Image 1 (cartoon, rainbow, N blue to C red):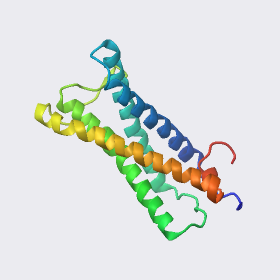
Image 2 (cartoon, rainbow, N blue to C red):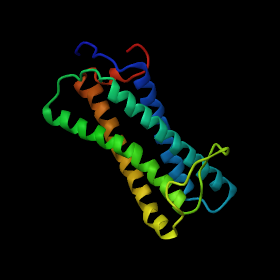
Image 3 (cartoon, helix red, strand yellow):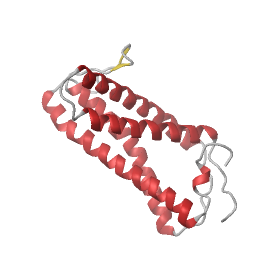
Image 4 (tube, helix red, strand yellow):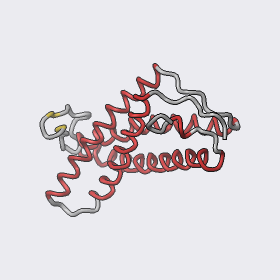
Length: 179
């Protein structure tokens, strides 16, 4: 095993894990709620899903700002193709962190269902109400959510490979605690 790699900053670690929990939870709620028949429970879950999407959007903006102003720690040595795959996967993750919730907001707005954050703060419509547009956007929100889930699973698999096969200390950089 190599020496411990430098670690990410505490805010970067906190944002990483908070977003991870929110994304996994929001995906699970989204998957579950779409299978429910019309009910108060379904309406409540849709609101929670929207609120979580807004939180994901805001935290993603904070995370991107933090990332642009703070260099990440050096990664352990790895083949060039792995460096390129890691860069592409992280770029795609960041893109989807914004695209999925923005498409959800656009769909909700186009369908005429406003987002009232936590039931008290009405957000402006992202697009004007338009039934045809909502029908075009809806499947893309779902497709990109599934793509995000797949890239997250790939990200987790790569981290576990580094932890248990390569044993290169890469995962310790993002784990909470003193590492």
